[in-house]
Length: 242
Image (cartoon, rainbow, N blue to C red; front, top):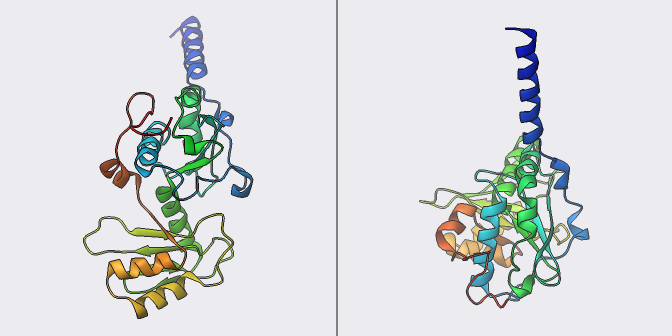
């Protein structure tokens, strides 16, 4: 092959690379959660409208199989103001930022969501991102094993703020998690497992026991896709109050 042909190929390759370059820095890593807007208060939103809007937004922003946590903040009109990706574990954050960057302008231009999101925040992909953290934590820290329940022992590297419940017949574990904004509890997750096993029997009763201890139940995106209503148009949902 001649030098001229090689030069032409090099220029073409350079042009292709330039076209496919993604500015990952357009999508920042998240600041500490305490410095971000809070999520909407419990009961502040119509649950159906919020679920439908959240699902539509998640399907646009979060790539299937992603294990990155994406935090979305809203302005006073409940429009997307900004978003960031939590650092998390591994290289999940980098891949998520690279995926989101080309879509950022379209995300910011979306129609407003439910009014209850004004000056608030939504966290997308919490279940999957927390599972990624849990798998990493298990490699560094010990775990407490109960009857179908698992929790993290006291660990300096990761918060012991979760309980996994392996329910018979379920394809994924049930993930119980303490709210992020709370200070770490003085009651270890392992102690909660022990107490709920002693005082309750069966999944429903033990689930209620764990929830009463200050945990919330997270579900996977796949579960939400199968069970929650879908928005139409530009993210508008029936009765979203917008």
